[in-house]
Length: 189
Image (cartoon, rainbow, N blue to C red; front, side):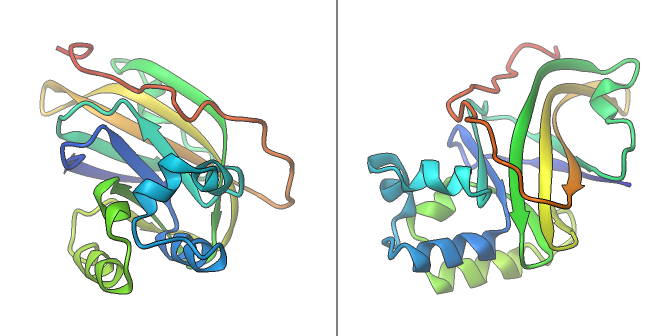
């Protein structure tokens, strides 16, 4: 199964984040973090801990472009590995937990004022069609991140693809380079 979303923007901040956003709220409460999660994540080790625990997967170096976002499940061949696609980045070793039956791609700005109201507003906006949110069984997932360009309507479009494979037991996650830069500008022209 594959889910595909077009024209996804990064809010002019060079980050995307992937995760169960309600699990992120639980993480915030459990660790008594402030509403400014962006500052807490960059000034201490709570951001690294959230990644290690599979709460979020940060993607740095995101150029300010409209992206095609794909979620590929069930062993389907990733679109970015099909003939005609241009793969630039391929990163394995990520792990995410889903506890609220959903996985979403969101931007850094939500972390700057992460309150119940802003979270509720974001969840309401994501109910509109075309938002990068998928329903997913609860559990733990291995995530492979692919980035490059796909041909759509005869043109190359910058794309990110998240290849998800459910795992049935917890395994230690290797340290992941969370500062890896997924820049694509100029690659697909």
